[in-house]
Image 1 (cartoon, one colour):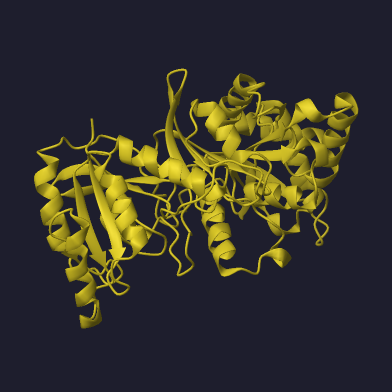
Image 2 (cartoon, rainbow, N blue to C red):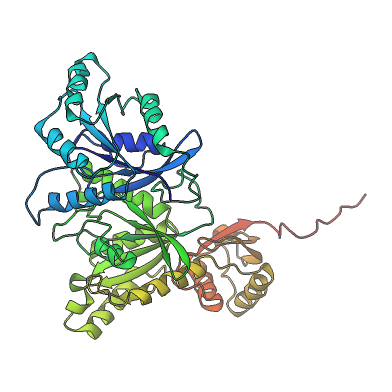
Amino acid sequence: MTFTVAIVGRPNVGKSTLFNRLVGKRIAIVDDTPGVTRDRREGMASIAGVAFRAIDTAGLEEAGAGALEERMRVQTEKAIDDSDLVLLMIDARAGVTPVDEHFADWVRQRHKPAIVVANKCESAAADPGVYESYRLGLGDPIAMSAEHGEGMAELLGVILPHLGGAPEDEGGADDALPADGAEPEAGPLRLAIIGRPNTGKSTLVNRLIGEERLLTGPEAGITRDAIMVDWEYRGRSLELVDTAGLRRKSRVADKLEKLSVDDTLRTIRFANVAVLLLDATVMLEKQDLTIARLVVDEGRALVIAANKWDAVKNPAEAMRSLRDRMQTSLPQVRGIPVVTVSALRGQNLDKLMQAVFDIYDIWNRRVSTGELNRWLALVVDGHPPPLASTGRRVRLRYMTQLKTRPPTFVIWGSRPQDLPESYRRYLINGLRQDFGIEGVPIRLQFRQGENPFAPKKRGRK
């Protein structure tokens, strides 16, 4: 088992900033607004070659039963219960507050080793707060500034003895996405759950993994960070990412929501498959289509899941309307799989996962060069390219597949710039139909010249 460190404290004391420092990546949203973090987020950190799991948690607040803050506190309790060491963080500039004292007692009652971290100590104004923190009764505090990296060596030095030589983790949960511009390496299937606010994304993730891992409730926009959960389904490893809901751009004015939207867009960019979750009672609105196009433009595989299907009064009519709208508004990607589900009741989730694996296999499909060139000869013979502006016919001579994820092809020929868009669509539709590449984006490029792999003709001496 990997050693686990939970970071807890009241809102806006710098927990997410410290979490980012420990894992060495800026993966948790950080803002001056209190209560930014709601779900607990995990990531892997390392000291002197010894790995441990860090957990960022929501700010501790007293709240009544059923309130969002109370549900957030339950998630923090679970993080403490799962941890081997607790870092109780306070704002040294504000000093020890009654809330800090209350939660220090709360942590002590859970019988976990704990360290007080007095944050925001970049100036002498924080010294009185550091001295005050002794009265919390949790030993010597560590004075630091998570934002500026001051005191990190002292903190890591205090954590290290608790690790006790814990083994390096070989692939534990890490919320970090690949660096910008990098294609995800082979490994677990990265599955992003996306959609408008309040369509049931977090409820779906909880149902899939079989535990209340993410905050849910009637309030729209509960999820702010993109939260990744390691999961195994029928022997296949997945990285399941819950994301913040995407509203229309014109409605996003709040700085914090903009950060959440950026986090979601980055998740889409590095996903393998995205499940677009619709509210079946108000299905496929303009914003749903905008999100679907984002996925297609990024070249990701897409599955559409119509949630709350148990509340639909006329299922046949609703499905017919959905498919007609997709055919009209997403003609560039034919055959996107559609699955009807109920995240709350757990209906059709196996069917949804099968659709995810099927579309992932298509997204990774490779066609041999020999097959492609035989196919190219047939389609060109059956429907030749039109005449170019010079009166001569465009000739397509050679074709190969450059890459998968998404399937990307290139055709060499004469005057490809004169090829009309309608003929390009003809070729793409033929590729879909004849090679079974339905439901995923296809990239088709044209290049001027002869077959680059043919033997070069020798000139006369």
